[in-house]
Structures are given as C-alpha cells and as structure tokens.
Image (cartoon, rainbow, N blue to C red; front, side, top):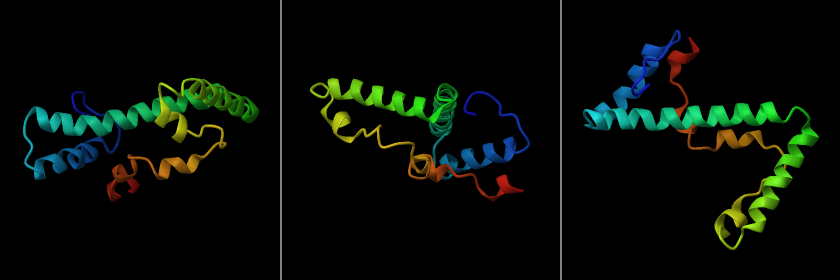
Length: 115
C-alpha cells in the first residue's frame, strides 16, 4: 500500500482510509508513506506467518508438538532471553482468540469493507 498499488474491490477506499489518518495528523511526504506502510506490513507479515503455521500443522497433535519444541527451544535460552522465556507460553494450546488482542485490532476495516 505504501509504495505499491493495491488490488481488489475496496482497494481505493482502503487506501483513502489509511492515508487520511496521517494526513489529518499533519504528516507529509515520506512520513505519510511510513505511517501507512507500517501497519500494512505488520498485517501482511502476520498473515504470511499464520498461513505458513497453518500449512505446517495439518494434524492438531503435530501442531502441539511444534509448540512444545519451540517452547523447549526458548526455555533452553532463558538466561539470554529471560523476559521471553517468562512470558512466551507456547504450550497453552491453540489460542485463536489472540487475534482479537493483537496490535492489529485497531486496524479493523471501516464499514465500507462490509458493503
């Protein structure tokens, strides 16, 4: 969105929405591009990672094993990454409700997206 045109039925309306916010804040030029690009690239990265994860774990047991392996990997490095080791709880099972609590929550598309 920041440097490449969007495709899709609501692309111009979505771009207008994303560009209007930094414009109202008084940003200009490259700062607008950065303000628009940051949430866009965050969401794209989240979606790509989620797609890869879901592609890897066809079987729920396999997904649980991958989470266990990742948790053990982090736990073994607790001395170097104490906050991550304390807060990352990957073995608590699949928690799709996390998506409702992530930083992307404020980026919920406006009403035009539901038309």
